[in-house]
Image (cartoon, rainbow, N blue to C red; front, side, top):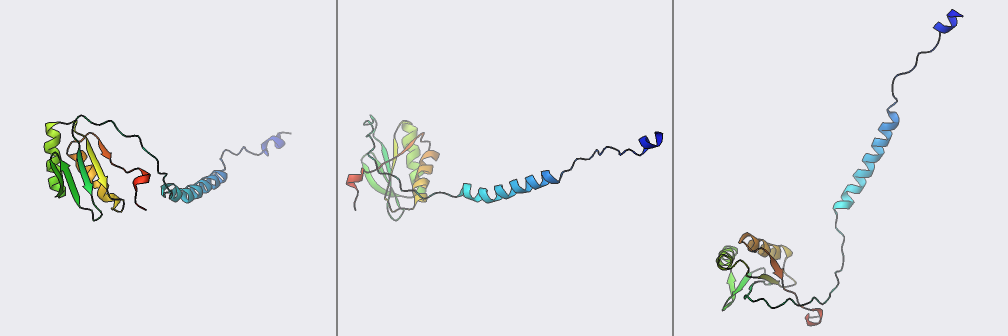
Length: 145
């Protein structure tokens, strides 16, 4: 009977990690497949809606216009549609905003202009100290076919 106790099997103390590795590989494949889908955009047609008009500001606003070729124009006070460079646009906005920080800054752009040029105009205005930059739009019934 003593001999029978000595032949008993020892308990296995190791953990079998193969199933865990299989699960991790499946998760890795899932993340590798879904990661490119998350970063890609979706093409959508945005609706054209009438936006409510803003109340007339008590201070005259500064309008930055970006034409189809990407050139900048600025309307400040009595000076209307003056062609300007990025540097002079920044300088003129600094002067206006130093005088009154509450001056509304608006950007109007041709619908065929490169989106990056519009964003660049907004960045210049913010760098000059504008707390907010608005966009000027045209209601759908006023757009050209």
